[in-house]
Amino acid sequence: MKRVALFAALAAGMMGMSAPASAHHSFAMFEPTKTLTFKGTIKSFQWTNPHVIVWVMVQPDGAGAAQEWSLETTSPGVLTRSGWTRMSLKPGDKVSVTLSPLRDGSHGGSLNSVTLLDTGQKLVPSFGKEMPGLK
Image (cartoon, rainbow, N blue to C red; front, side):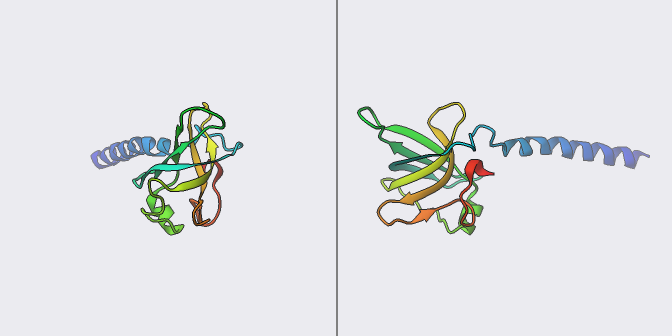
């Protein structure tokens, strides 16, 4: 009987530890029904788990200071299988990005695709398919 109780306690503990992991993968903060496209310059490309982050400096139409946009994409493993490398984007690269914006309107979103303007190379985060809202 003690073995059954010990097993039940261990199973309950393991299930309790899995809840934060599943909550991590929510993309509710992005608006998947909206798509924005703009040109900018890569500021930084953070190739880390669990999600790669791209920072792009965007000059707004008209006057004003450049805006920094933070774009989240999938993991380095998925990007690698999609043809990306940690050197796919470098600071200073001129790009056109398509994204699903943050719902709160701040400068960020879920990266759907990035095109290097110098070469025309288009990179998408998943096996050749654009990913609105990282679905």
